[in-house]
Image (tube, rainbow, N blue to C red):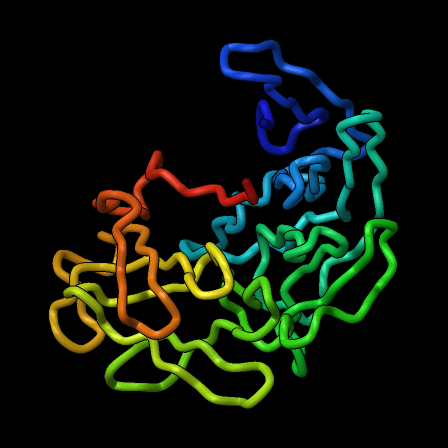
Length: 251
């Protein structure tokens, strides 16, 4: 947890109703993520508030450059917090928040890459550039590559679907078509080698949702499209302050 943004320390609650363990940081933080094995924290460091991305200019708005300074890896057993300075991508047209994320196995971290080829740039836990896992830099979708390395999530220009799964070995592409009246909007995490967690809305024809695209819920879908299991109720508007966001980790 972060008390504010940016924050000078990160807190970890040791259990339900337990005390908060505070770990001081060398640089202020604007985001924090658990590692897949829940033994480390990945902190994205910012000099200012990354969510204050616009400033008023002549009755209009101008995008502020990002204030990101790098990332910190926190080892929870020792409490060691190692900061690695990393300047933002100068070609990135977007200011504000540019958080780092973990690779699927937790051995690397990555940021979005604004200059093709590749959608992601990877670094090791010491701050050095590294090649990413096979296929991982081919998609902007959060789900990325399946645990067994076979499937990668992707968007497709298909009138019957917005999302697809690509077989990394053969190049075969499977459309994630509407199922049980649900239009799949995003692929967000893998449950196992054959099931992916998605954001889906109640379908109202081609690429259209009942209510709006922001009224959606988490749906578990198998890669062959034969099963869809609702995991949550609908978020009525995920653009409103206070709307909930899921956090995925291994169990």
